Structures are given as structure tokens and as C-alpha cells.
Image 1 (cartoon, one colour):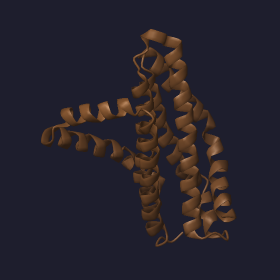
Image 2: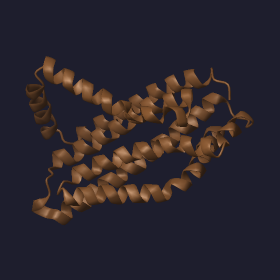
Image 3: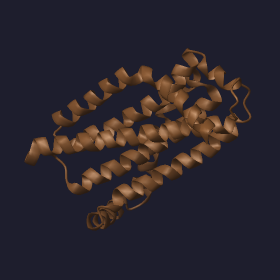
Image 4: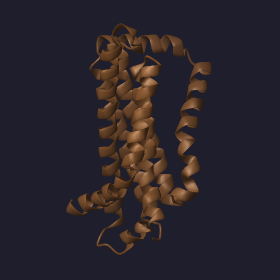
Length: 221
């Protein structure tokens, strides 16, 4: 367990150089949320930026050639994978907390002008975390396989997947009716929205970690 923590610490040290970028991205999300009178826009945008920040650690390691360090450390590849995903999970929690605080502050500051309800607020937190875990879960195995420089273009894959799924669902199913039923359910059980989001996100990251481990353990460093 200590070696996994040490692997995670290496990623945090590498991520320190991204703090300025993170601050700028959060400010942009805040401005968008206020300008649109929609806290949920800023909240979800924050989680999208979180995915970018989370993947950038690969870029830092490759640029500084510190990714080669893992080859000489007394660290199993599986432990390195666990440390990288633990890093991603902590970053995800940090961003979702920041998004929640930001959304709440905008909501209270705008008052009646805020385009948000209790349901949309909590649902955005849940869906935002699911998106973060889904996008990170898709991109991480790709980065482990091809490296950040070669695979950065694939970071948009999650967006395309979601768009395609949405088109298929709207054309082949009665999405409007189903969405109304789902909304009604969560309106009566608002507390379940963030809980389902947390569970769904953790499952997605766990599946991704298994896939990444299968890829990375077969790769020469």
C-alpha cells in the first residue's frame, strides 16, 4: 500500500506544475456560470476541465521523461496503475467539491435569477462525476497504450460516444417519456442523484483500471 501511495505522490508532484492552468480553468467555468445565469453550466464545465487536468499528468511525465523513472523504481506496474488511478480519483473528488461549492455560491448570489433547482443542482453533481470517471476511464488506457503525445487527439472520444448514444436513443426509444419518468423519480428522491453518480463513477474507473493494467503490464517501459 505504501508503494501505491508513493506512486500517487509522484503524480501529485508532477501535477503541481498544472496549478496555474487549473486556477484559470476554474475561473473560466465560474464566469460561464454567472454569465449564463446557470450554475449547472459552470459546474459541468468544471468537471470537463477536470478531465483535462487529470490527463495532463501524462504529458508532464513524458515531457520531463519522468515516466522512465517507473522502470527503475522498486514498483510493480500494477502498483503504478493503482497509484495513477488513485490520483485521478482524488482529483475527481477535488473538482466535484469545487464544482459543488461554485454552483452553490452562484445559485445564492443570483437568487431568483439563477436557472437551477435542487434537483438540477444535485443531478449535475452526480452526472458530472460520472462524466469525469467515464472520460478519464476512456482516455487513461489509451494513454498507457500509445502515450499522451500520440493519443491526445482521442481525449474527445468520450464526447463522441455520448453524442452517438444520445442520437441512437432518441431515434430508437421513447426517450422523452423515459426521461420524464426518471426525472419524476429523482424529484422524489433527490438524495439518490449524487449517490448513483458516485457509485456509477467508481464502477467506471474500476473497469478502466483493470483494462489499463492489462495493457500496461504487457508494455515495455
